[in-house]
Each structure stands twice: as C-alpha cells, then as structure tokens.
Length: 105
Image (tube, rainbow, N blue to C red; front, side, top):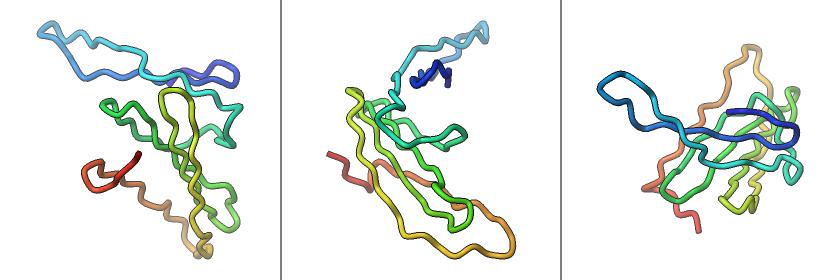
C-alpha cells in the first residue's frame, strides 16, 4: 500500500516469473476523505469483484469494530459492529473474509 495524502494506492501481484521477478499492478486508489479509516488498518482485496474490505478499531477503550467496503468507484459502505468489552489481555479480533459465503452486491 502506498500512501499519498488522503489517497492510498493498493498494489497487488499474483505472478512471479521463472526469473523470480515480481510483477506489480495498481489495483485501486482509495480516497480516504470519504471514510473515517485510520492508518494501520487490516484489509482484504477481492480482485475479481474489484473491492477492498477494511477493518479498524474506532476506539481502543471499547474496541468498537468498523468494516468499510470500498468499491472500484470509491463507493463506501460502512458496517459498525457492536463494541465488545475490553479484556485484561489484549488479543486483536480475527478478521476473516470468505467470498464464496458472503454476498456483496
């Protein structure tokens, strides 16, 4: 991911040729001015459907979870999950995405 002001470019690769050279291509430029996404987020890319799923915590105190789904045209959908109580030991939530089981339209 390359950060440039309020825009981040996400570069992907899926091929390493026989000379072990990695070929990169820009997948999506995300306009952060349309979201409340901070740096240090976790994200997954769906190249086929052209979208990115971001997860980040809004609050370290209550661990409020937010997922943003950002499409190729920078259309943003935001999903707030209920806050869960802070435990005595920090263990970050598991972020999993299975495209075959989740319908995103």
